[in-house]
Image (cartoon, one colour):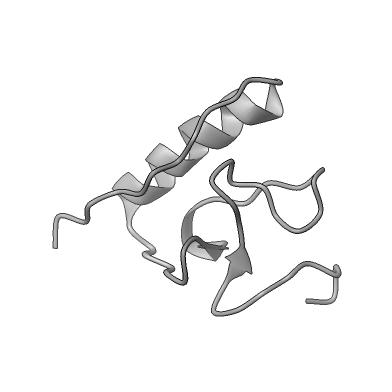
Length: 69
């Protein structure tokens, strides 16, 4: 919040894992995607892969991760 990012239960991200500041991406425990903060390792890995492609100028879409629990 102090950084000026939109937050809910976490830092709100879009399908690119981009925050309300287009220069900042968030993944894992801090990222809130579709009103959910899963805080699970497989989710963090999937989100990080998407964010990495998009940071590098690609166009990857995060569609969610089905939790194992």
